[in-house]
Image (cartoon, rainbow, N blue to C red; front, side, top):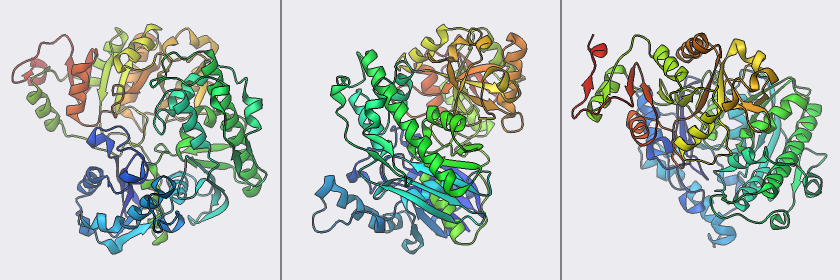
Length: 556
């Protein structure tokens, strides 16, 4: 059975293809359109489909629209406010519902059978993306985000047959995600986009307003919560667009909201554990991308294991909708073995791109060793390898790499990317060395938890240690990521440190690099020393050629 999952409502439009219960391809539209988050999350944009992501998924499997048995659309208009006679009411909410109802017609324009379209509730899709993609046979599940059709969270349990028992739903207007969005806008950043900046800023502050905010923001005793309106300006003045001029007051406000959101999530986890008795928790929704909260839930909460779906934001609802539709049709679905589900290129195609770009390049005996040597010599490397990642984290396929031993490399990478200096960069570490350097539970292959950096290592890898002594860790196994592991092994042999700085390969305001053209543009516009693209490398100190230059190493 061929099932295409589609997310087109709100932001992060995406497509996922599940064939015979296995995830074959997944991609976000922003990687093709080069527009961050794909589109603006307003009602007017609801009709826009992730056409390029859909085309990629089908092409990957050698399918055409007529081969698709089910198109699973991750929003159910039957659960949403009706459009009535006035689609402009409630900030055009009726228009959003109307466009979703018309989605089968929009999909028909791409060649799909309108009768094949199945609507899957937004939070059901999030929940399915969490549990059905996880390695667990059963789990408790928490979904928390800004909003779905009428709600902002779902708590439940999946049984071994893939059936969801919904235990609690929090109706709007109460929403942890919208609360965080409001704070993001108050601090001068873009809502539904820059919430991770607020999480980073929170580490510089003290949660001195947490007690006051807890009177407005708290869990109930029935698996829900309350988020009453906050007078933000009474706690810290609003910042201009871009967040320039932030002070300790703003950091304290960010820290306070972060703390109360964590407290609510912990209370929800405790309630859910009491209801289900499950040892394992799965999570999705935009709030599940808050790696600081995830780490605290794992550390202080009642569950022994927590698995967060790597594309936990709205793009992941395309995955969940497809998996849920497959299960509903009687298919057995396989877990999500990797987040590397996007595009890749054969060696000849990569060489052709380099030739067209007119750059001098070489093919070393071992690209991983060449990269490790460059990093050990304090070079910055753009790393473009294999299939691109699904979700917001660079996990060793579209990454900027640097030496963690040099404190200045934090500022250097933020300059390369053109982003705020208060933001941290992350470490990738060989899995067998993780426990020695980063306290807490491992493995952590998707960079969705923070860990305390061991005291003895903080001065050895200062570039990846955040102001609060933590790091958002990606553990690397040889089985799952052999090329990345070999690069880390070589760097370890050269330096005695089994850790490398890893941040996403992009510049401020741009989506992550996805294809070779993106990689070359990023390399050409940013002060990066080496581009490693497949088995080839391009060095900053090599001159440009008019028609491309292959070095003797390549020709040999």
